[in-house]
Image (tube, rainbow, N blue to C red):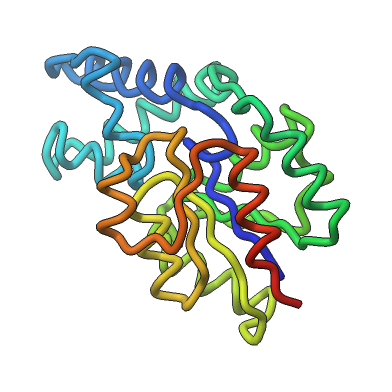
Amino acid sequence: MPIYFDLDGTLTDPREGITRCIQYALGALGSAVPTEDELLWCIGPPLLQSFEKLVGDAQAQAAVQLYRERFDEQGWRENRPYDGIAQLLATLRTDGFPLYLATSKPLVFAERIVEHFGFSGFFTDLFGPDLHGNLSDKAELLSHARSVVGLAQPAFMVGDRRYDILGGKANALTTIGVLYGYGSREELSAAGADYLAQDPGELGHLLRANYRR
């Protein structure tokens, strides 16, 4: 039974890199620069959508480009795997689960991060949008991924924000919201998550308990 994993807030904690890159972009545009804590809501949604709320539609695209300047140079390294994630991925792979990445982060950066943390060998394939934003919507991304992997198979979607849960539901996937990321219990429950996991250990138990061949 395939498992599609979100990246930010699910496998790794990107707080430092994402917030600092947003601050860099806002400062370069002469906009007010919120604190790191005030920008946590930006972790999860497509980046362009976040900048549209922060600086308006007219400057959003320029903000994305400035963000990527810093992210490409150093922001992607300002990131860390959650405790227990490497062990979880290794165990699931050994148990025979096909693992896939389904992230709203541009694929070129996601590939770099997965390789950097030594996760590449765990995944059968990686799915994410291009730098132009194609497939940045999680429902569209998962639809594309399932067309590649095989639509007939039941599968899981694991993520920390409502976008992951709603995208999974739109594609008839069993959804698991993780509570150690950036979405609250209320957010994930309201989106219709089938299950909630407090930590990677509980996530592993839920996946194995609901496994179907």
